[in-house]
Image 1: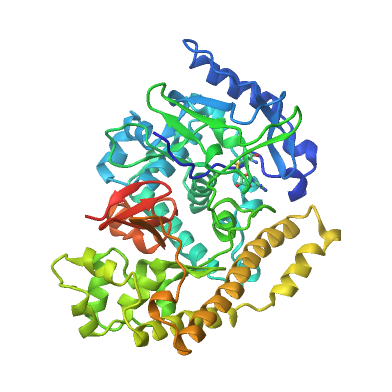
Image 2 (image 1 turned 90 degrees about the vertical axis):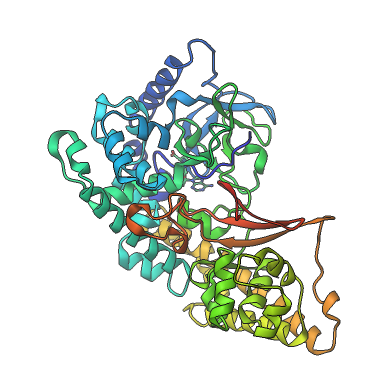
Amino acid sequence: MAAVLVGSSVRVPSAALLGHAPGVVERGAAAREERLKQWLRGMTKHRQLDFDTMGFGRGRNGFGMIASGAIDKGSVLAEVPLQAFLSEKTAERCLLVGPMLRKNDFRPWLTMCAHLLVERSRGKESFWHPYISALPSVEELSISHPLLWPAETIQELLQGSPMLDTIATRLKLCQEDHEALLTAGIEKFLPGGETLSEGDVRWASAVLLSRAFSLELDVDDDFDTLCLVPWADMLNHCSSAGEESCLIFDQDTKTASLEAHKSYSKGDEVFDSYGPALTGSQLFLDYGFVDDENENYAVDLPAQVLGPVRSSVNAALLEALGLPAGGTLVSIVPEGVDESVLAWTRAAIASPRELSAAGWKSDGKYQKAIMYFSEPINRDNECEVLRRLIAACENLWSKYPTSLEHDLDELTGGESDMRTTTWARKQAALRAIVCEKKALTAGKTVLCGFLEKLRAGAALKSLYEVDREEGTFEVRLFVATKDRSGTSGKNRDAAVHNYGDFGKRQALLIEAGRVEIRAQTTSMLLE
Ligand SMILES: C[S@@+](CC[C@H](N)C(=O)[O-])C[C@H]1O[C@@H](n2cnc3c(N)ncnc32)[C@H](O)[C@@H]1O
């Protein structure tokens, strides 16, 4: 019953990096750690769980978890009982806001935002007080998380990057979510009569983006559950850690646990993985950092950058697949693009005759059609596919104000500014942009190579070298996640936002004729 980590985040933002006086940030950390541990132990009297393997401390990148003694590779780092989780389920069961949440049929993301904000406002009255009081404040989170950065900083540091659009979309959603919560009367549930600001909603969203997990809590659930898992969200991420160090939930013992991906000595910082495939820009957008080890270079673009879809018939095919031009993201990676992007583009530009050869009928027979486009269909179509992809790379490049060399120089220079918020934000943004540019540079070269090969007469069948397991091949078309609850949060189609369902990607898997959306967070059949 493995579930994949969606996120986790800083309780106390990286003090050294972000320029706080260490005493200010760390004051009270030991007390908060003890309070949290005691609270967790109180829930597990029947079964002894070990919360002493690690403790709060100063790690390589600021605040994190430090090994209390030697830890062997593969041993359990943390186990957290279900009772401690703050989740969609606890939100719905809450006597205070549950009825309001159910009545409004909010999507899981908004439900969790509301739950977190109400519990925060309840202070010591809240069951989760030991956890929530240890979360970063708006001020702390606004240093590291781009969702809370000033608008001009975002514009300045992300100039030219498609990440700008993602943040703009997320900010708009926060605004809409704020309005939806006010309309639903959330302020009635805030003790002390305080008002709810849009900044509060951005704080809750940033906490969820950087800390929440998506776990299969019950085998009968149709979808994974969005949860905050106290204690497990205190570890920093390391891109060299793999799936073995992602959080898993055991439905028998009702505990979430993390395992060590390597051995540690006493005093070492302990890491987990927020997801082994996370790219630089995903790390930056969701968590506000890109670590040194990250080599998942990619630039994510809306499919519209590949040019117009040929006709409404092509659009209907893509729509039927759940991959409309307006709601689909394509990833350009150093290897070029994956097969799914090629398939999408072939289908988007196919002529009526080619669509008919693919077997496309607007009666839902789309599975066959997408399989058809998973291979080049003819030389003209394939040339146009590659030409469009190369043009998209060039177009994107022309928008960045600086060169890759310039950015790399900036990353290694500027030591005198270290420890300031400005410096830390710039470093994080630059690292993400460098990942995009590396993907774009290498990706375009590869795509140009394919086009040259094709023009030189290479056979279509041998144009791309494909690493494929027998009977199955994975096409990693990253699409914006569909909002599970459809149109809640007030008639919004979150599929176009890459955020509605906590901003995670889904990969399209074509397996023996089955088309499946395989998500980092959830799995759902298209049919
Ligand atoms: C789950 S928290 C990790 C614990 C957190 N450092 C804390 O103080 O509670 C994730 C956040 O920690 C920070 N973080 C995690 N891994 C990091 C890394 N490798 N480098 C820099 N910051 C990191 C980021 O601010 C991220 O949003």
